[in-house]
Amino acid sequence: MNLIDKIFSFIVGLGVILGGLMSVVWFAGSLLVYCLLDRPIWEVAILLGVTLFVFIWFCVSIVRRRPSRDSARKLQDDDNWGEDREELEDYLDEIEEGLSEARSKGKEKELKELEEARKDILSQIEGHQLEGTVEKLRRLREEARKAGREVEAEEHSKRIEKHEAKLKERGDRIEDLPQHLRLFVYFMLGTVGASVAFLSLMIPMVMLLVTWAFWETWAGGSEWMRSPGAMIAVIFSCLALACVAVWFVSGYFSPDKSESKKKSTGKNERERPEVARRNLQKRRRG
Image 1 (cartoon, helix red, strand yellow):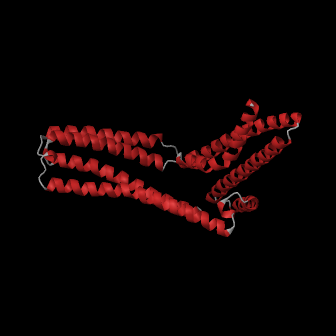
Image 2: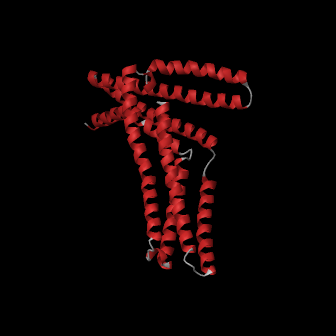
Image 3: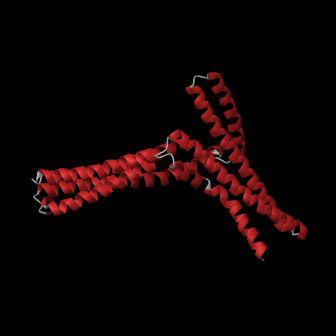
């Protein structure tokens, strides 16, 4: 699973980088074309100064707002686990109330369903706790190795192995599934990932073809590309595109992106207690 995720992230990241570079190339190319129009020096200087100032200012503001990777990753891990735990505990409280009502009314069928939902949520809480402990121990081990504390790092490694063994016994992760099921899941994920990754590479490829078409148009003596008014509009359009590309690339590689991944991976795990919650609310309304 980690290998598939790394390959997918690499290909999609490559597509994002190439798309961002092509956007910046379009902006630089539009400025170059304008400089070749034999316009007055003061006009070229003003246009270059304004557009480059806006682009550089935007890039600097994006970089300043971006948090450090280590601190953001730690905060996100804590925040995500806090949100997941609070949500699961809310479900658990509602199920406990439903259990009390079912016991008082002697509804054996509902009591059995709610008991199963309760065990499911408790199991998910335990799994989240184990995963959170493993992630925390890995960070501590990495910090200990960087500081040269090998004995402490070895102790963290032993504790990680102990908790990893518990996670393997639970069988919640894909890598803990039977081999035939694991291979099937890997195949399906790999197929979907390859399709998405291929599409992500199509955008910069199309932009490259459009760049070649622009070059052919310029070399062919195009009138609109030699019109100062038209090229000024193109310059500011490319400036906006380049700024959006910088914002998107920065956001994609920002540590904040891991939050959406974790929320998406945890969505399936929260579906069953959500179903139990809806059933409980329906019974109450009935």
